Structure formats: C-alpha cells, structure tokens
Image (tube, rainbow over all chains, first blue to last red; front, top):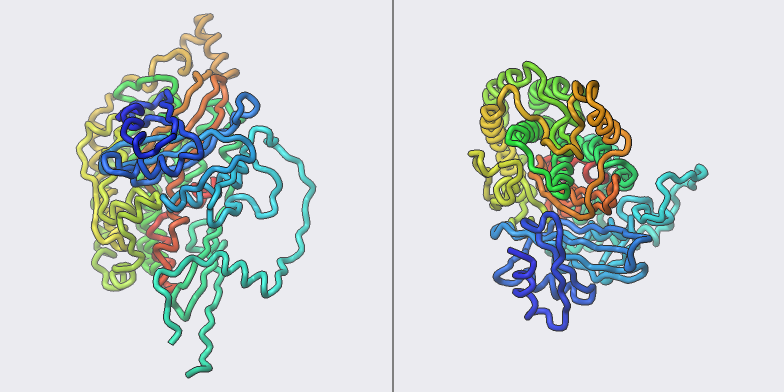
Length: 188
Length: 393
C-alpha cells in the first residue's frame, strides 16, 4: 500500500486536514505521511477504520533537527496492521513549546513512549494522564536527546537528603499512580 | 465486623529483587495477597545509548546497540544494520543473508535458554536453570569462535559481516543443532507436565490478543494469546520468506502458553538454522561488494594505492550515508525489534532509535497482574521475559 493510497482512504474521514506523502528509503514496506498536530488524533482514528485497520501500535519516537530546521522536532509514529501485514509511519512537525495531542486514549501503548519523549526531548503531550519523566530522575534539568544538550556534562556531585515526604504527599502519590481497577472490590 | 481494618498495604518490590530481571522496581498495592495496583518504575539502567550513538560513526554504533538488549544482542545489530543498509541501498549476497539468519536464530535460542532457565528457577524448578545454562555455554563458545566475544561479538556489520566464518564453525554449529532437540525434550520432561508448574502457570497473567495489539505487545506474548503476527513472515528480511518454518502460537495467553510458545519456537529456530547451514557454502562472500562501506581485502591494501586510501578513509572518517530515514523491524527473541535511523548525509547518525519490546511489556504489566496474587507477579514477569537493558537503553 502506498502513501497516496492511504491518504486517499483516510482523507474523507478527516475534513480540513492536509496530508503529504513523504519519501523514505523504506517506503515499499512503510509509507510515510505528514499531518499537522491538530489533525493527528482524527487521522489515527481514520487509520483504525475499516479497510486499513492499523489497530496495533508499534512505536513513537522523535527526531531533533536543531539548528537546521524550523520547526525543529519530528514526532514519528509507527503503526502496524498485523493481519493485513501493512505498516504506516505518521509524522508530525512541531516546534519548541508546541504540544502534541496524546494518542494514549486511542492506543494505550503510546503512554510510556510519550512519557519517554517528554523526558528526553521535552515534547509535551496534551491530555496525557501521567506525563512524568520516565528514564531520568524526576528532578533532572534539561532534555538529554535534544541536539543542544551537551554530550558530556560535568556536574558537581550532589548530595540528597534522605527521602522524606509527609503522609499526605505519600497518599497523593499513591493515588496518582494507582491504576483504575477493572472491577471495584466491594468492601463488605 | 464494622471495625475490621480494610486498608491496603504498599510493598516495594525491587529494584534489586532477584527475579525482576535486572533493575525493575514495582510499587505494589496489596489487599491481603491480591494485587490492587502496580506502579512499575524503570530507568535505573538508562545509559543514554541513543544519545551516545549520535556522536559515533555509523559502524561504531554497532557495539552500542548490541548492549541494549544484552540477551538478544545480535538481533539489535541486525535491525540497525538492515536499517542503515536500507538507506544506503545495499543488497546483500545470499550467503551473507543466510549467515545472518543463522546468527539471529542462534541468538534467539540463546536468549530463550536464559529465559527458560531463569523463569523455571523463579517458579521453583532450579534444575531447569542448570540445564539451560549448560546448553547456552555452547552458544557462548560459538560466539567466541565467531567474533572473539562471548556476549557481544559485533559480528554483523553494515555492509555484511566482519569477516568470513572461521574454520570449523559450521561443524560446531551442526553439532549443537543435533544436540539441542534432545536436550529440549529433557527440559520438557522436567517441566511441561509437572503438576506444580501447571498450577503455578495455567490461567495466570492472562491477556487477550486485542489488548496485545493496543499495548504494542508482539512476539511470543501476542502469539501465545492467539495472534499470528511474526515479523519474519509479515515483513520478511534476510530472505526469511524462503525458509520453511511454522509460526508457533497458542490461544490462552497465560503464563503456561507463553512457556509453550517459546519452547516450540526454539525447535523452529533449530529447523531454520539447519536450512541456513545448508545454504552457506564453505567459501564465498561475507560482505557486499560496495566499496563505500566495505574495506578492501588486506592483500590489496598492502599492494595497491587506491585500496590503501580506501582502507584509511573507511577506518578514519567512516562512510557517509545519504540523507534519509528507515525503520526495519526484526523479529527479536522478545518481539518486534526495530531500528529507526535518520541520516543527515554525514558520517554520523542524526538519530538512532531502537523500538523496545520490553518497554511495552513493562508498561502493560498491570494488565497481567492486577487482580492476581502477589506470588504470581514473579511468574508473570518471568514469562514476559523483559531485559532491563533493552527497556531503559
């Protein structure tokens, strides 16, 4: 399936969106489309629709083109249709401080990879339920995978106070990290 | 009974718990012995490999990516090399592809043997680990024969392989392949119908195929839940479409089915390895003939000026890759390994990103264990076969 065919299939379902088929070295297997971040969620909903069925989430990552390009980031999604044996790559171009809508509602598997991008690139995902750092410590400054972040960073050794939080803070953090129970247990 | 205390208890499992496969921390909320919620915390092994890779020349990245998923090392380098070759537009000779298939399948067996050993040990069958590591030692020795390293041979290179296979390698692999099926029978006698094993694993950590798709879980986990998605079949690389093998699956999606799937996968890998061995002629090409990437043979370097210049160019500046991008998925031991590379036309990558199957498995952990017993957490983590080096990168 070529990028043009995919665009023709999803364009009616996403009114007002401008799609662009991008050339890539692996376009025979993975055709690429470019879409604006405003239409990303609608595009992915259309990709899940009949005839395409990109039901499976493969990956999301980002590329920083600083200082050669403006907008500097590419956010790159990969989706798979396991039974139709097709793949697609969807790209969104954003600049610093431009949020991208989250796909974690549509594809729950996007949750942690989006956190990873927030952690390492500083890209904010709008509507993400749990946007915290994933790899780096919570109090880390800067976004390591940006091109303007130094490769080697000399930092003074830090001493941390032993972890001391109040009971309320502990409760709040447990509440935040608690996943929704599938079936609420009765406390009878 | 109004004054019975019903509050839940918070238990911190890890990061140094022996059965969390490296450094995975789980904050579990327990109601009695039932898991109410789980918060996995990762990142303890984050080493910034993707950032480091951007500073290295294309060929120098290979040892780095091998250290991501350290049990399936050569699946990583295969994914990376295939992606770079895709951008370069290189076609590999049949012998190189067959050797890569052989190496990738031996790596899968090696990884599954570690999985089997540790998984069995965690559930209580310590003998399993002693057996599995005995066979894995042979695979380590084969790696040593091949590349000088036991864990990370860095033998697969962009443009082919590092050098030709050493004398005696094929015979040694053949001897191993003849030995393994009997040993697998031994493992299965030990465990497959063991009532304790069945009690601990059947109906535990169940996931549906739909959830697997949504949460990005492929590989043995999805196939044990009724899927048939295998990258080797769906998007063949290295001429996998010309090999005869079955995509192993099961239907229940529990710990036991994941066990059966991986055990049967090892037997399929033996089949593929035997076919690959038949295709590898004793002498022949071990790299493609692209002068940009593959250094000239040593006898030419010593006698010809152009070859000498080319040799020094490749080893000092490295080669450039035309601007472009590629993502080539590979069926690794844990599922879909894929390497997304972006080149800006220089001799260093602009971005190297490895898709991590383990990250997805850790993310979806609550799907498997919430509502189950705390003792099953160990069984589930073992059956997901996460490698924290791959999760954290």
